[in-house]
Structure formats: C-alpha cells, structure tokens
Length: 313
Image 1 (cartoon, rainbow, N blue to C red):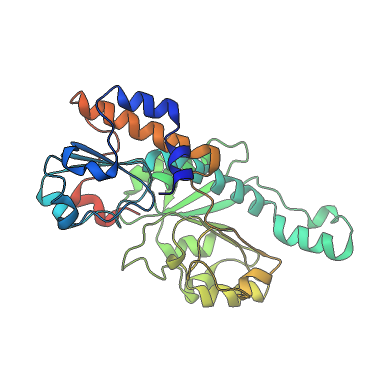
Image 2: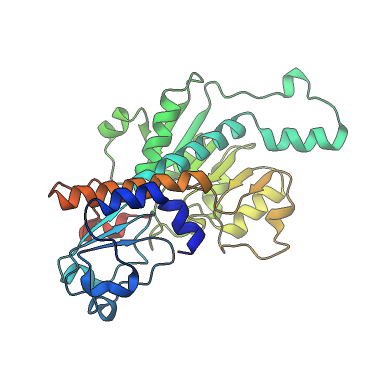
C-alpha cells in the first residue's frame, strides 16, 4: 500500500502498540521477520519471496480478501494466516443496509421524478420499508450482519435467504427463511448479494432470474460484480422495470459512458462500501491485536484456513 494508506491503517499510536510485541522492521528486512503484516498492494507471497523470509511463521493481513495474496507455498511452509475481513465487514453491512432502506422507499425513481417535474409525489405513490421482503444471497460474514440489521429493524422486514451451505434450521436462527434462488428472486422486492466470487457463482443472477424479480424491484450489489449478468441488468434497468444500487460491477471499473452511469434508477458507486478514510484504522487495530494474540500464543480471531479459502470472498 502507499504511504498515505499505510499511515491511515497504522497511525503512530498503533505502530507504537505494535512495537510493544517486538522489533518493527521494514520490508527490506524480511530475513528477520517472524510475522509479516500485509495490506492493499502487498506483493504476492510466492515461493521466491518467502525464500527471503526463512523465519516467517505468520501473515497478518490488515485488509479483507487474501485470495490474491496467498500461494500454495504459504501453506506448504505451515505459515499461519489471518485477515482483518471481520473489521471490514461492519462498514460494508452498514452501507448495504442503508441502500436497502433507500431501495425500500424507492428513493432513486422518486428522486428522478422529483427532479423532472419539481413536484412531490402524491401519497399513493410513496413507498415505505415496513413488511418489505428482502432476499439475501449468501450467509457470508457480511450477509449475516446485514440480516441482523434487517431482523432488528422496526420495519419488520421479511428475509429470504439463499445459501446452499445453510440449513433451514440455521436460516431460522438468523431470522430468515431458506429458499432456492429462483424462489428468492420471484418473491423479493429487494435482492442483496453477499456471495463470494467462485466459478459456480459467476453470473448467478442470470437474465432469467432477473426477469423473475417483481416489477419495481431493486438489486443491491456490494459483493462482486461478476455475480450479476451485467448486460441483462442493463436491459432490465433501461426498461425501468428494475432499479439497482451497485458498488461493484463487471467489468470493474465500468468504462466511461457505460449505460449504467446514465440511468436515473441506477446508482453506481466506486467500490466504497468497505472501510474508507477514517474507517481504515479499524483494519490496523484488528491486525495489531492479531499480532498480540499470536505473540502470546492465543488463537487468531481472523485465521484463514486453507480448506476454507475457496468459499471466501
């Protein structure tokens, strides 16, 4: 990561706390490192790079996904890996919940109509959040936080969940009803995506499934752009039948002049749901605490196991 990002993630007070657990060396001193603290833009941990760090026993990632960072050499050397994904999940869940509230009130079409005629909508044209059905795709860490926010809201949201790894009983404990994906699409006025990017999840919301969403529905995507058939979504939104809040897209970023940018019923944001600005300190604090736990021989809260890597974002 750049200097500005590194300073924001690990400001002086966190660096001082880190120094309490041992000598803090820079990346040119890998040969001395027992613990490697990584973040955005860190080099991939190839066998060649790890060869320069013979003492390395733990990698603590002060960011979310580690898929791009790790190679088989990490596991072959028995190196423990931890990610601050849990610290990043809160901002994403908050952002997603805010978008769901906006979608419940149909804020985008309401704003478009208001700007066109400069007139408030009549009472019968207004929409509210109470008793809305929200379809959650993926009971991931973030998906569970979003469901918790929905479950405890005064609006009384009905939550449908699609996740092939979650039983009906577990879904009920989360405040949701487990259904197949087609049923979720056909019965949700808002669909929010929280599945990882895997070969089987690419294009998960196909043209056929988008067509199942009731008229006036909204797609919220703060997960991965590849989960949605972009061309099909463009057609649905261009017709005015669906709306969309997209913090991620496929491709990412979208090229200048892409149709989604000009639609009044679509809001595209530049991948800002995760920790931003003042929030990134949470990632550094989480990582420093993980170093403390490792030094003291405690179990790491954010440990990433090799067998779970394929199911993670």
